[in-house]
Length: 603
Ligand code: BDP
Image 1 (cartoon, rainbow, N blue to C red):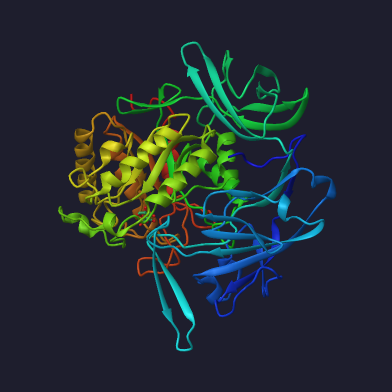
Image 2: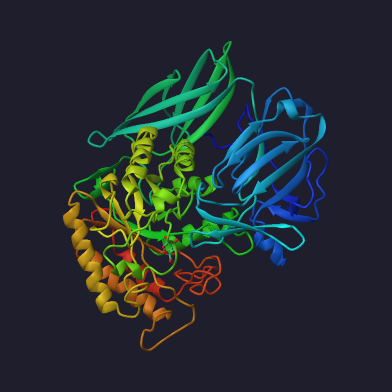
Protein backbone atom coordinates (compact mmCIF):
# COMPACT_ATOMS: atom_id res chain seq x y z
CA UNK A 1 0.00 0.00 0.00
CA UNK A 2 1.49 3.31 -1.06
CA UNK A 3 2.04 6.18 1.36
CA UNK A 4 0.17 9.27 0.16
CA UNK A 5 2.45 11.86 -1.46
CA UNK A 6 2.15 14.74 -3.88
CA UNK A 7 3.90 14.42 -7.26
CA UNK A 8 3.46 16.12 -10.62
CA UNK A 9 0.35 13.96 -11.11
CA UNK A 10 -0.98 13.83 -7.54
CA UNK A 11 -2.21 16.36 -4.99
CA UNK A 12 -2.34 15.92 -1.23
CA UNK A 13 -4.52 17.74 1.30
CA UNK A 14 -4.27 17.37 5.05
CA UNK A 15 -7.51 17.09 6.99
CA UNK A 16 -5.72 17.31 10.31
CA UNK A 17 -6.74 19.99 12.78
CA UNK A 18 -9.52 20.46 15.29
CA UNK A 19 -12.61 18.33 14.58
CA UNK A 20 -16.07 18.14 16.13
CA UNK A 21 -16.39 15.23 18.54
CA UNK A 22 -18.99 13.48 20.65
CA UNK A 23 -19.27 10.40 22.80
CA UNK A 24 -22.14 8.14 21.70
CA UNK A 25 -24.05 7.31 24.88
CA UNK A 26 -26.32 5.01 22.87
CA UNK A 27 -29.42 6.64 24.33
CA UNK A 28 -30.53 8.13 20.99
CA UNK A 29 -29.75 7.08 17.46
CA UNK A 30 -27.12 9.19 15.77
CA UNK A 31 -27.90 9.56 12.07
CA UNK A 32 -24.97 10.76 9.98
CA UNK A 33 -27.47 11.95 7.32
CA UNK A 34 -27.45 15.30 9.18
CA UNK A 35 -24.63 17.01 11.08
CA UNK A 36 -24.07 15.15 14.36
CA UNK A 37 -24.99 16.96 17.61
CA UNK A 38 -21.33 17.20 18.62
CA UNK A 39 -20.60 18.96 21.89
CA UNK A 40 -16.80 18.92 21.95
CA UNK A 41 -13.68 19.59 19.92
CA UNK A 42 -10.78 17.19 19.47
CA UNK A 43 -7.45 17.63 17.75
CA UNK A 44 -6.54 15.16 15.01
CA UNK A 45 -4.23 13.28 14.93
CA UNK A 46 -4.21 12.33 18.61
CA UNK A 47 -6.00 10.09 21.07
CA UNK A 48 -9.15 11.74 22.38
CA UNK A 49 -8.60 10.47 25.91
CA UNK A 50 -6.13 12.97 27.33
CA UNK A 51 -7.57 16.02 25.56
CA UNK A 52 -10.20 16.45 28.23
CA UNK A 53 -10.45 16.60 32.02
CA UNK A 54 -13.80 14.80 31.88
CA UNK A 55 -13.14 11.37 33.31
CA UNK A 56 -16.24 9.87 31.68
CA UNK A 57 -14.87 10.82 28.29
CA UNK A 58 -11.33 9.75 29.06
CA UNK A 59 -12.40 6.29 30.18
CA UNK A 60 -15.25 5.80 27.72
CA UNK A 61 -15.61 2.32 26.23
CA UNK A 62 -17.91 2.12 23.26
CA UNK A 63 -18.68 4.39 20.32
CA UNK A 64 -17.76 7.99 19.57
CA UNK A 65 -17.97 10.31 16.58
CA UNK A 66 -15.75 12.78 14.77
CA UNK A 67 -16.92 15.23 12.13
CA UNK A 68 -15.60 18.04 9.94
CA UNK A 69 -16.25 19.72 6.63
CA UNK A 70 -13.88 19.87 3.72
CA UNK A 71 -13.91 21.24 0.19
CA UNK A 72 -12.40 19.86 -2.97
CA UNK A 73 -11.43 22.28 -5.71
CA UNK A 74 -13.55 21.87 -8.85
CA UNK A 75 -10.46 21.29 -10.95
CA UNK A 76 -9.81 18.11 -8.97
CA UNK A 77 -13.20 16.51 -9.43
CA UNK A 78 -12.12 14.90 -12.69
CA UNK A 79 -9.36 13.13 -10.84
CA UNK A 80 -9.69 10.12 -8.58
CA UNK A 81 -10.19 11.59 -5.09
CA UNK A 82 -9.15 9.29 -2.26
CA UNK A 83 -9.72 9.71 1.46
CA UNK A 84 -7.05 8.05 3.55
CA UNK A 85 -6.78 7.37 7.26
CA UNK A 86 -3.38 6.52 8.74
CA UNK A 87 -5.44 4.57 11.29
CA UNK A 88 -8.69 4.75 13.28
CA UNK A 89 -8.57 2.95 16.60
CA UNK A 90 -10.05 0.34 16.66
CA UNK A 91 -13.03 0.09 14.26
CA UNK A 92 -14.44 2.78 12.00
CA UNK A 93 -17.47 3.57 9.85
CA UNK A 94 -16.84 6.51 7.52
CA UNK A 95 -19.61 8.64 6.01
CA UNK A 96 -19.33 11.35 3.39
CA UNK A 97 -22.38 13.59 3.17
CA UNK A 98 -24.26 10.96 5.19
CA UNK A 99 -23.43 8.01 2.95
CA UNK A 100 -21.12 5.25 4.13
CA UNK A 101 -17.91 5.38 2.12
CA UNK A 102 -15.59 3.12 4.11
CA UNK A 103 -15.36 0.64 6.95
CA UNK A 104 -12.26 -0.75 8.63
CA UNK A 105 -11.53 -2.90 11.63
CA UNK A 106 -8.12 -2.93 13.31
CA UNK A 107 -6.75 0.16 14.99
CA UNK A 108 -3.21 0.39 13.63
CA UNK A 109 -3.44 0.11 9.87
CA UNK A 110 -4.16 2.63 7.14
CA UNK A 111 -7.26 2.36 4.98
CA UNK A 112 -8.73 4.43 2.19
CA UNK A 113 -11.78 4.95 -0.01
CA UNK A 114 -12.42 6.54 -3.38
CA UNK A 115 -14.80 9.39 -2.81
CA UNK A 116 -15.86 10.55 -6.26
CA UNK A 117 -19.37 9.10 -6.12
CA UNK A 118 -20.03 10.78 -2.75
CA UNK A 119 -18.62 14.22 -3.42
CA UNK A 120 -20.57 17.39 -4.07
CA UNK A 121 -19.20 20.63 -5.46
CA UNK A 122 -18.25 22.98 -2.64
CA UNK A 123 -18.51 21.85 0.97
CA UNK A 124 -18.67 18.18 1.94
CA UNK A 125 -19.27 16.65 5.35
CA UNK A 126 -17.05 13.88 6.69
CA UNK A 127 -18.40 11.92 9.66
CA UNK A 128 -16.75 8.98 11.38
CA UNK A 129 -18.14 6.65 13.97
CA UNK A 130 -15.41 4.80 15.86
CA UNK A 131 -15.45 2.02 18.42
CA UNK A 132 -12.68 1.37 20.92
CA UNK A 133 -14.14 -1.96 21.99
CA UNK A 134 -11.90 -5.00 22.18
CA UNK A 135 -12.84 -8.59 22.84
CA UNK A 136 -11.67 -12.15 22.30
CA UNK A 137 -11.85 -11.81 18.50
CA UNK A 138 -9.82 -8.61 18.18
CA UNK A 139 -6.15 -7.61 18.27
CA UNK A 140 -5.18 -6.47 20.80
CA UNK A 141 -7.27 -8.80 22.95
CA UNK A 142 -9.69 -7.26 25.45
CA UNK A 143 -12.02 -8.73 28.04
CA UNK A 144 -15.41 -7.31 27.14
CA UNK A 145 -18.41 -7.03 29.47
CA UNK A 146 -21.57 -4.95 29.68
CA UNK A 147 -24.16 -4.03 32.27
CA UNK A 148 -27.32 -1.91 32.50
CA UNK A 149 -27.74 1.06 34.85
CA UNK A 150 -30.92 1.43 36.93
CA UNK A 151 -32.34 3.74 34.30
CA UNK A 152 -31.67 1.18 31.59
CA UNK A 153 -28.53 2.66 30.05
CA UNK A 154 -26.02 0.21 28.60
CA UNK A 155 -22.52 0.48 30.06
CA UNK A 156 -19.80 -1.27 28.09
CA UNK A 157 -16.47 -2.14 29.60
CA UNK A 158 -13.17 -3.29 28.17
CA UNK A 159 -10.61 -4.68 30.57
CA UNK A 160 -7.36 -4.52 28.61
CA UNK A 161 -5.69 -7.91 28.37
CA UNK A 162 -2.38 -6.06 28.05
CA UNK A 163 -0.24 -3.53 29.87
CA UNK A 164 -0.91 -0.24 28.09
CA UNK A 165 -3.75 2.25 28.13
CA UNK A 166 -6.43 1.62 25.52
CA UNK A 167 -5.98 4.97 23.82
CA UNK A 168 -8.33 5.54 20.89
CA UNK A 169 -9.44 7.97 18.21
CA UNK A 170 -7.93 9.27 15.00
CA UNK A 171 -4.31 8.61 15.89
CA UNK A 172 -2.72 9.26 12.54
CA UNK A 173 -3.11 11.78 9.72
CA UNK A 174 -6.34 11.97 7.73
CA UNK A 175 -5.68 13.04 4.18
CA UNK A 176 -7.26 13.51 0.80
CA UNK A 177 -5.14 12.76 -2.20
CA UNK A 178 -5.83 12.65 -5.87
CA UNK A 179 -4.51 10.49 -8.67
CA UNK A 180 -5.36 10.36 -12.35
CA UNK A 181 -8.16 7.90 -13.22
CA UNK A 182 -5.55 5.45 -14.44
CA UNK A 183 -3.04 5.24 -11.65
CA UNK A 184 -0.15 3.45 -10.00
CA UNK A 185 -1.73 1.37 -7.28
CA UNK A 186 1.17 -0.37 -5.60
CA UNK A 187 4.92 -0.81 -5.90
CA UNK A 188 6.89 -3.72 -4.47
CA UNK A 189 10.66 -3.48 -4.23
CA UNK A 190 12.85 -6.47 -3.43
CA UNK A 191 16.58 -5.90 -3.90
CA UNK A 192 18.82 -8.96 -4.25
CA UNK A 193 22.29 -8.03 -3.09
CA UNK A 194 25.46 -9.58 -4.45
CA UNK A 195 27.74 -8.84 -1.52
CA UNK A 196 30.84 -10.14 -3.23
CA UNK A 197 30.53 -7.96 -6.30
CA UNK A 198 29.06 -5.00 -4.47
CA UNK A 199 26.08 -4.93 -6.82
CA UNK A 200 22.36 -5.58 -6.61
CA UNK A 201 19.42 -6.58 -8.75
CA UNK A 202 16.50 -4.45 -7.73
CA UNK A 203 13.25 -6.26 -8.50
CA UNK A 204 10.38 -3.83 -8.89
CA UNK A 205 6.82 -4.84 -9.49
CA UNK A 206 4.10 -2.31 -10.18
CA UNK A 207 0.35 -2.76 -9.92
CA UNK A 208 -1.90 -0.31 -11.64
CA UNK A 209 -5.53 0.68 -11.44
CA UNK A 210 -6.70 0.71 -15.06
CA UNK A 211 -4.19 -0.01 -17.78
CA UNK A 212 -1.10 1.80 -18.96
CA UNK A 213 0.53 1.38 -22.38
CA UNK A 214 3.84 1.41 -20.59
CA UNK A 215 5.28 1.50 -17.07
CA UNK A 216 8.74 3.03 -16.62
CA UNK A 217 10.91 2.60 -13.58
CA UNK A 218 13.95 4.78 -12.90
CA UNK A 219 16.27 4.33 -9.93
CA UNK A 220 17.84 7.51 -8.59
CA UNK A 221 20.59 7.79 -5.98
CA UNK A 222 20.88 10.33 -3.16
CA UNK A 223 22.68 12.79 -5.44
CA UNK A 224 19.80 12.71 -7.88
CA UNK A 225 21.80 10.65 -10.39
CA UNK A 226 19.95 7.98 -12.38
CA UNK A 227 21.56 4.61 -11.74
CA UNK A 228 19.27 2.37 -13.76
CA UNK A 229 16.01 2.16 -15.62
CA UNK A 230 13.65 -0.37 -17.13
CA UNK A 231 10.15 -0.68 -18.51
CA UNK A 232 7.39 -3.07 -17.53
CA UNK A 233 5.19 -4.00 -14.60
CA UNK A 234 7.76 -6.58 -13.46
CA UNK A 235 11.34 -5.47 -13.86
CA UNK A 236 14.74 -6.16 -12.45
CA UNK A 237 17.27 -3.37 -12.59
CA UNK A 238 20.88 -4.06 -11.85
CA UNK A 239 22.82 -1.50 -9.83
CA UNK A 240 26.61 -1.65 -9.94
CA UNK A 241 28.72 -0.30 -7.09
CA UNK A 242 25.74 -0.32 -4.86
CA UNK A 243 25.61 1.95 -1.82
CA UNK A 244 24.16 -0.29 0.88
CA UNK A 245 21.69 0.74 3.56
CA UNK A 246 23.46 0.00 6.84
CA UNK A 247 22.34 0.34 10.45
CA UNK A 248 23.01 3.97 11.51
CA UNK A 249 24.43 4.60 8.00
CA UNK A 250 21.28 4.90 5.97
CA UNK A 251 21.41 5.31 2.23
CA UNK A 252 18.17 5.66 0.30
CA UNK A 253 17.55 5.35 -3.39
CA UNK A 254 14.33 6.47 -5.01
CA UNK A 255 12.32 4.38 -7.43
CA UNK A 256 10.52 6.75 -9.73
CA UNK A 257 7.61 4.98 -11.39
CA UNK A 258 5.75 6.46 -14.35
CA UNK A 259 2.55 5.20 -15.97
CA UNK A 260 2.43 6.18 -19.64
CA UNK A 261 -0.52 6.34 -22.04
CA UNK A 262 -0.41 7.58 -25.65
CA UNK A 263 3.21 8.59 -25.15
CA UNK A 264 2.35 10.85 -22.24
CA UNK A 265 3.26 10.36 -18.59
CA UNK A 266 -0.07 10.06 -16.79
CA UNK A 267 0.85 9.14 -13.22
CA UNK A 268 4.08 9.43 -11.24
CA UNK A 269 4.99 7.99 -7.85
CA UNK A 270 8.33 8.08 -6.04
CA UNK A 271 9.18 5.39 -3.49
CA UNK A 272 12.31 5.70 -1.33
CA UNK A 273 14.04 2.39 -0.59
CA UNK A 274 17.28 1.01 0.77
CA UNK A 275 19.37 -1.87 -0.50
CA UNK A 276 20.48 -4.35 2.12
CA UNK A 277 20.29 -8.05 2.86
CA UNK A 278 19.01 -9.82 5.96
CA UNK A 279 19.57 -13.43 6.86
CA UNK A 280 19.63 -15.71 9.88
CA UNK A 281 22.41 -18.27 9.73
CA UNK A 282 24.41 -20.32 12.21
CA UNK A 283 22.93 -18.61 15.27
CA UNK A 284 23.73 -15.17 13.89
CA UNK A 285 21.60 -12.33 12.57
CA UNK A 286 23.28 -11.10 9.40
CA UNK A 287 22.70 -7.69 7.84
CA UNK A 288 24.64 -7.28 4.60
CA UNK A 289 26.36 -10.56 5.41
CA UNK A 290 27.78 -9.32 8.72
CA UNK A 291 26.73 -10.46 12.22
CA UNK A 292 24.57 -7.65 13.63
CA UNK A 293 24.05 -6.94 17.35
CA UNK A 294 20.72 -5.34 18.33
CA UNK A 295 21.06 -2.56 20.93
CA UNK A 296 17.90 -0.77 21.85
CA UNK A 297 14.38 -0.88 23.07
CA UNK A 298 10.85 -1.98 23.21
CA UNK A 299 8.84 1.22 22.86
CA UNK A 300 5.33 2.56 22.84
CA UNK A 301 3.64 5.26 20.87
CA UNK A 302 2.87 7.16 24.04
CA UNK A 303 3.28 10.83 24.90
CA UNK A 304 1.57 13.33 27.16
CA UNK A 305 -1.68 14.73 25.72
CA UNK A 306 -1.29 13.10 22.29
CA UNK A 307 -1.62 9.68 23.91
CA UNK A 308 -1.03 7.15 21.15
CA UNK A 309 -1.49 9.85 18.49
CA UNK A 310 1.28 10.68 16.05
CA UNK A 311 3.79 13.00 17.67
CA UNK A 312 6.52 13.66 15.16
CA UNK A 313 8.57 15.89 17.45
CA UNK A 314 8.75 13.04 19.97
CA UNK A 315 9.62 10.58 17.19
CA UNK A 316 12.54 12.76 16.14
CA UNK A 317 13.64 13.28 19.75
CA UNK A 318 13.39 9.57 20.56
CA UNK A 319 15.64 8.62 17.68
CA UNK A 320 18.05 11.34 18.65
CA UNK A 321 18.16 9.99 22.23
CA UNK A 322 18.67 6.45 20.91
CA UNK A 323 21.56 7.48 18.71
CA UNK A 324 23.13 9.46 21.52
CA UNK A 325 23.15 6.27 23.62
CA UNK A 326 24.72 4.19 20.89
CA UNK A 327 21.48 2.26 20.32
CA UNK A 328 20.66 1.03 16.83
CA UNK A 329 17.21 -0.55 16.96
CA UNK A 330 13.77 -0.93 18.49
CA UNK A 331 10.69 -3.13 18.28
CA UNK A 332 7.31 -1.60 17.47
CA UNK A 333 5.85 -3.12 20.63
CA UNK A 334 2.93 -3.91 20.67
CA UNK A 335 1.38 -2.80 17.38
CA UNK A 336 2.49 -1.36 14.04
CA UNK A 337 3.70 2.22 14.42
CA UNK A 338 2.84 5.15 12.17
CA UNK A 339 4.03 5.18 8.58
CA UNK A 340 5.77 8.46 9.41
CA UNK A 341 7.90 6.68 12.04
CA UNK A 342 8.75 3.86 9.63
CA UNK A 343 9.90 6.34 6.99
CA UNK A 344 11.94 8.18 9.60
CA UNK A 345 13.68 4.93 10.62
CA UNK A 346 14.58 4.23 6.97
CA UNK A 347 16.08 7.71 6.79
CA UNK A 348 17.91 7.50 10.14
CA UNK A 349 19.25 3.96 9.76
CA UNK A 350 17.35 2.63 12.75
CA UNK A 351 16.75 -1.13 12.62
CA UNK A 352 13.16 -2.13 13.33
CA UNK A 353 11.47 -5.32 14.45
CA UNK A 354 7.96 -4.79 13.11
CA UNK A 355 5.27 -6.16 15.42
CA UNK A 356 1.56 -6.87 14.86
CA UNK A 357 -1.03 -5.81 17.46
CA UNK A 358 -1.25 -9.44 18.60
CA UNK A 359 -0.82 -8.82 22.30
CA UNK A 360 -2.85 -10.33 25.12
CA UNK A 361 -3.18 -13.78 23.52
CA UNK A 362 -3.17 -15.30 26.93
CA UNK A 363 -6.28 -16.38 28.85
CA UNK A 364 -4.60 -15.89 32.20
CA UNK A 365 -3.06 -12.44 31.71
CA UNK A 366 -2.14 -10.64 34.91
CA UNK A 367 0.98 -9.16 36.41
CA UNK A 368 1.62 -12.16 38.64
CA UNK A 369 3.96 -14.35 36.70
CA UNK A 370 5.23 -16.18 39.75
CA UNK A 371 3.31 -19.10 38.21
CA UNK A 372 6.56 -19.45 36.32
CA UNK A 373 7.88 -21.35 39.29
CA UNK A 374 5.34 -24.07 38.56
CA UNK A 375 6.75 -26.24 35.82
CA UNK A 376 3.29 -27.44 34.78
CA UNK A 377 1.77 -24.02 34.16
CA UNK A 378 -0.79 -24.04 31.35
CA UNK A 379 -4.16 -22.55 30.41
CA UNK A 380 -6.95 -22.81 27.84
CA UNK A 381 -6.02 -19.74 25.72
CA UNK A 382 -6.33 -21.48 22.38
CA UNK A 383 -9.83 -22.69 23.18
CA UNK A 384 -11.00 -19.38 24.61
CA UNK A 385 -9.66 -16.92 22.02
CA UNK A 386 -10.89 -16.50 18.48
CA UNK A 387 -8.31 -14.18 16.94
CA UNK A 388 -7.05 -16.12 13.90
CA UNK A 389 -9.05 -14.10 11.42
CA UNK A 390 -7.96 -10.73 12.80
CA UNK A 391 -4.40 -12.02 12.99
CA UNK A 392 -4.33 -13.08 9.33
CA UNK A 393 -5.89 -9.80 8.24
CA UNK A 394 -3.37 -7.68 10.09
CA UNK A 395 -0.42 -9.71 8.82
CA UNK A 396 -1.61 -9.18 5.25
CA UNK A 397 -2.06 -5.46 5.86
CA UNK A 398 1.22 -5.05 7.72
CA UNK A 399 3.37 -6.74 5.10
CA UNK A 400 1.55 -4.83 2.36
CA UNK A 401 2.23 -1.55 4.17
CA UNK A 402 5.81 -2.10 5.33
CA UNK A 403 7.30 -4.54 2.78
CA UNK A 404 9.56 -1.92 1.14
CA UNK A 405 11.13 -0.54 4.33
CA UNK A 406 14.86 -1.19 4.62
CA UNK A 407 14.62 -0.50 8.36
CA UNK A 408 12.33 -3.51 8.87
CA UNK A 409 14.53 -6.58 9.34
CA UNK A 410 12.14 -8.98 11.06
CA UNK A 411 8.41 -9.50 11.61
CA UNK A 412 7.20 -10.11 15.14
CA UNK A 413 3.98 -12.05 14.75
CA UNK A 414 2.90 -11.69 18.38
CA UNK A 415 3.98 -10.50 21.79
CA UNK A 416 3.79 -12.85 24.77
CA UNK A 417 1.17 -15.32 23.64
CA UNK A 418 0.40 -18.54 25.48
CA UNK A 419 3.14 -20.46 23.73
CA UNK A 420 3.34 -22.78 26.72
CA UNK A 421 -0.19 -24.07 26.19
CA UNK A 422 -1.51 -26.86 23.98
CA UNK A 423 -2.74 -25.49 20.68
CA UNK A 424 -0.01 -22.84 20.34
CA UNK A 425 1.77 -24.59 17.49
CA UNK A 426 -1.47 -25.20 15.60
CA UNK A 427 -2.44 -21.54 16.05
CA UNK A 428 0.91 -20.08 14.96
CA UNK A 429 2.02 -22.41 12.18
CA UNK A 430 -0.40 -21.02 9.53
CA UNK A 431 0.49 -17.45 10.56
CA UNK A 432 4.22 -18.03 10.06
CA UNK A 433 3.53 -19.74 6.72
CA UNK A 434 1.36 -16.83 5.65
CA UNK A 435 3.90 -14.17 6.60
CA UNK A 436 6.72 -16.00 4.86
CA UNK A 437 4.62 -16.36 1.72
CA UNK A 438 3.64 -12.68 1.73
CA UNK A 439 7.00 -11.01 2.28
CA UNK A 440 8.80 -10.26 -1.00
CA UNK A 441 12.04 -9.73 0.98
CA UNK A 442 11.85 -13.02 2.94
CA UNK A 443 12.64 -11.40 6.25
CA UNK A 444 13.08 -13.60 9.32
CA UNK A 445 9.98 -14.10 11.45
CA UNK A 446 9.59 -14.46 15.17
CA UNK A 447 7.17 -14.11 18.03
CA UNK A 448 8.14 -12.67 21.37
CA UNK A 449 8.31 -15.37 23.99
CA UNK A 450 6.80 -14.94 27.46
CA UNK A 451 8.62 -16.09 30.63
CA UNK A 452 6.28 -18.97 31.30
CA UNK A 453 7.19 -20.50 27.93
CA UNK A 454 10.49 -21.84 29.22
CA UNK A 455 12.53 -24.20 27.04
CA UNK A 456 10.65 -27.07 28.69
CA UNK A 457 7.16 -25.60 28.58
CA UNK A 458 7.38 -23.98 25.13
CA UNK A 459 5.30 -25.67 22.43
CA UNK A 460 6.15 -23.77 19.26
CA UNK A 461 9.64 -22.25 19.23
CA UNK A 462 10.69 -24.34 16.21
CA UNK A 463 8.62 -21.88 14.16
CA UNK A 464 10.78 -18.84 14.89
CA UNK A 465 13.96 -17.77 13.13
CA UNK A 466 15.22 -15.88 16.18
CA UNK A 467 14.42 -16.67 19.82
CA UNK A 468 13.12 -13.35 21.11
CA UNK A 469 12.72 -13.54 24.87
CA UNK A 470 11.01 -11.26 27.39
CA UNK A 471 12.54 -11.99 30.78
CA UNK A 472 12.07 -10.44 34.20
CA UNK A 473 14.40 -12.36 36.53
CA UNK A 474 15.14 -9.88 39.27
CA UNK A 475 11.82 -8.10 38.84
CA UNK A 476 8.63 -10.16 38.74
CA UNK A 477 10.53 -13.11 40.17
CA UNK A 478 13.56 -12.91 42.47
CA UNK A 479 12.61 -9.29 43.07
CA UNK A 480 15.49 -7.60 44.89
CA UNK A 481 17.71 -10.68 44.59
CA UNK A 482 19.95 -10.07 41.60
CA UNK A 483 22.32 -12.85 42.56
CA UNK A 484 19.74 -15.60 42.13
CA UNK A 485 18.29 -13.74 39.15
CA UNK A 486 21.69 -13.90 37.47
CA UNK A 487 21.91 -17.66 37.99
CA UNK A 488 18.39 -18.15 36.60
CA UNK A 489 19.15 -15.98 33.58
CA UNK A 490 22.31 -17.90 32.80
CA UNK A 491 20.68 -21.28 33.30
CA UNK A 492 17.79 -20.48 30.99
CA UNK A 493 19.98 -19.08 28.21
CA UNK A 494 22.05 -22.21 28.41
CA UNK A 495 18.95 -24.36 28.07
CA UNK A 496 17.72 -22.42 25.02
CA UNK A 497 21.15 -22.65 23.41
CA UNK A 498 21.04 -26.42 23.82
CA UNK A 499 17.49 -26.73 22.57
CA UNK A 500 18.06 -24.63 19.43
CA UNK A 501 21.82 -24.32 18.78
CA UNK A 502 21.16 -22.96 15.28
CA UNK A 503 18.87 -20.11 16.33
CA UNK A 504 20.19 -16.75 17.52
CA UNK A 505 18.80 -15.55 20.84
CA UNK A 506 17.97 -12.00 21.82
CA UNK A 507 16.13 -10.28 24.64
CA UNK A 508 13.18 -8.21 23.45
CA UNK A 509 12.24 -7.16 27.00
CA UNK A 510 13.94 -6.98 30.36
CA UNK A 511 13.44 -4.23 32.86
CA UNK A 512 12.61 -3.02 36.34
CA UNK A 513 10.09 -0.40 37.41
CA UNK A 514 12.00 2.65 38.58
CA UNK A 515 10.64 5.85 40.06
CA UNK A 516 12.74 8.73 38.72
CA UNK A 517 14.47 10.48 41.59
CA UNK A 518 14.09 7.52 43.98
CA UNK A 519 17.50 6.55 45.34
CA UNK A 520 18.67 3.86 47.73
CA UNK A 521 22.09 3.14 49.23
CA UNK A 522 20.99 -0.53 49.40
CA UNK A 523 19.91 -0.68 45.78
CA UNK A 524 16.28 -1.39 46.69
CA UNK A 525 13.77 -2.23 43.97
CA UNK A 526 12.17 0.84 42.35
CA UNK A 527 15.34 2.90 42.94
CA UNK A 528 17.51 4.19 40.11
CA UNK A 529 20.38 2.19 41.62
CA UNK A 530 18.44 -1.05 41.35
CA UNK A 531 17.55 -0.41 37.71
CA UNK A 532 21.23 0.12 36.91
CA UNK A 533 22.41 -2.96 38.80
CA UNK A 534 19.68 -4.97 37.11
CA UNK A 535 20.97 -3.94 33.67
CA UNK A 536 24.59 -4.58 34.68
CA UNK A 537 23.69 -8.07 35.83
CA UNK A 538 21.92 -8.89 32.57
CA UNK A 539 24.74 -7.46 30.43
CA UNK A 540 27.21 -9.72 32.20
CA UNK A 541 25.26 -12.81 31.26
CA UNK A 542 24.55 -11.69 27.68
CA UNK A 543 28.26 -11.34 27.04
CA UNK A 544 28.87 -14.99 27.94
CA UNK A 545 26.80 -16.34 25.02
CA UNK A 546 28.16 -16.11 21.46
CA UNK A 547 24.69 -16.88 20.05
CA UNK A 548 23.11 -13.98 21.99
CA UNK A 549 22.62 -11.35 19.30
CA UNK A 550 20.84 -8.46 20.89
CA UNK A 551 19.44 -6.60 23.84
CA UNK A 552 16.26 -4.53 23.58
CA UNK A 553 15.30 -3.42 27.03
CA UNK A 554 11.85 -2.61 28.43
CA UNK A 555 11.05 0.22 28.07
CA UNK A 556 12.44 3.24 26.30
CA UNK A 557 10.22 5.56 28.37
CA UNK A 558 7.63 5.37 31.15
CA UNK A 559 4.17 4.94 29.64
CA UNK A 560 0.49 5.04 30.50
CA UNK A 561 -1.36 1.82 31.38
CA UNK A 562 -4.69 0.74 32.77
CA UNK A 563 -5.14 1.01 36.54
CA UNK A 564 -3.73 -1.70 38.76
CA UNK A 565 -1.99 -2.02 42.07
CA UNK A 566 1.26 -2.75 40.26
CA UNK A 567 1.10 0.50 38.29
CA UNK A 568 1.59 4.02 39.68
CA UNK A 569 0.43 6.40 36.93
CA UNK A 570 1.53 3.81 34.46
CA UNK A 571 4.49 1.56 33.87
CA UNK A 572 7.74 2.94 35.24
CA UNK A 573 10.21 0.66 33.47
CA UNK A 574 11.35 3.48 31.21
CA UNK A 575 15.00 4.36 31.24
CA UNK A 576 13.61 7.79 30.35
CA UNK A 577 10.61 9.32 32.06
CA UNK A 578 7.50 9.88 29.99
CA UNK A 579 8.81 13.35 29.18
CA UNK A 580 12.18 11.84 28.20
CA UNK A 581 14.35 12.85 31.14
CA UNK A 582 17.08 10.23 31.61
CA UNK A 583 17.18 8.00 34.68
CA UNK A 584 20.59 7.11 36.12
CA UNK A 585 21.08 3.91 34.13
CA UNK A 586 21.13 5.80 30.82
CA UNK A 587 24.77 6.75 31.49
CA UNK A 588 25.72 3.13 32.11
CA UNK A 589 23.91 1.86 29.01
CA UNK A 590 25.33 4.66 26.92
CA UNK A 591 28.83 3.61 27.89
CA UNK A 592 28.10 -0.03 27.20
CA UNK A 593 26.35 0.45 23.88
CA UNK A 594 28.81 3.01 22.59
CA UNK A 595 31.54 0.42 23.01
CA UNK A 596 29.62 -2.37 21.25
CA UNK A 597 29.95 -2.17 17.46
CA UNK A 598 26.93 -2.69 15.19
CA UNK A 599 28.70 -5.67 13.60
CA UNK A 600 30.95 -8.45 14.78
CA UNK A 601 30.49 -7.98 18.53
CA UNK A 602 30.32 -11.68 19.30
CA UNK A 603 32.99 -13.02 16.97
C1 BDP B 1 5.51 -7.84 29.43
C2 BDP B 1 4.74 -7.19 28.31
C3 BDP B 1 4.75 -5.68 28.35
C4 BDP B 1 4.66 -5.19 29.77
C5 BDP B 1 5.86 -5.70 30.54
C6 BDP B 1 5.83 -5.24 31.99
O1 BDP B 1 5.14 -7.65 27.05
O2 BDP B 1 3.70 -5.17 27.56
O3 BDP B 1 4.54 -3.80 29.85
O4 BDP B 1 5.89 -7.09 30.52
O5 BDP B 1 5.22 -5.93 32.80
O6 BDP B 1 4.67 -8.76 30.01
O7 BDP B 1 6.36 -4.19 32.28
